[in-house]
Image (cartoon, rainbow, N blue to C red):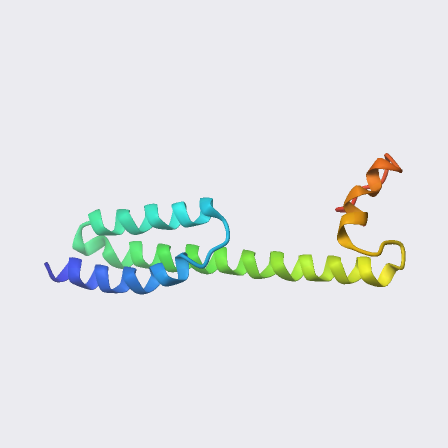
Length: 104
């Protein structure tokens, strides 16, 4: 019973961070890992907890980096004087078929 109390307390704190993840797929992966932790034997709890924390950290880092990448891309578009906004950059491939907004 101590295992479940300890696991539930830790998982409820981690779930606050999980709910802030932007991708549904990441939230589902995290909830699956958390459920596996509840079902794990008490001696396996530390390894499950470590896996959950590492995976959550990885997802949070990926999300921060993708937001930074988006901000840098938008700044590049704004400073390039080629486009007035992001929508123009996304739609430019209609005028020039070789244009790739991701490369830009």
